Image 1 (tube, one colour):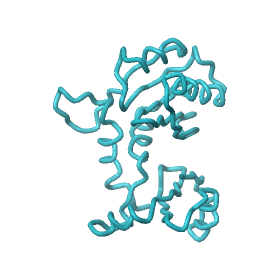
Image 2 (cartoon, rainbow, N blue to C red):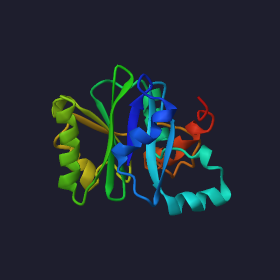
Image 3 (cartoon, one colour):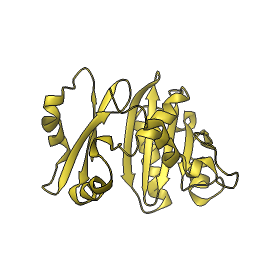
Length: 193
């Protein structure tokens, strides 16, 4: 779980109050870090995972998993009608910006292609963007012409693979397939605020 807190409301001494929104269990740890120029992200991680990481790395350098992907999308000056969609296993993350600022981010678990389409349509509706006006920018475990992209094409004005180059890759590796992983490289120097 995670929550974003606008900097105007965020105070480090209130992290535990904000963490109440996450329903933190006794076997979880809470982390807080800048997400972008406007928001702080507060998120929880299983304590067992945090302990394994702490054996090799300093926990103050942990990075919210979607931070790189969110920042990579923001660098392209996204239009208000663009919804970024990233598929990883049985989860889909959806992201939208308004006037260059993060407007929406959430992750949903799904089992079928119809559920994937449902969540994308749900988000577009919540954002008050008619589906025929939405440009879906796809990344992760999806390819043009596969079942998921074909089904999404039927409901949205335009869909395209996100081929944003973050780092140099061998040509046989499609950029959209590893975008969330390569985008973490954008976070290396941005942890201190």
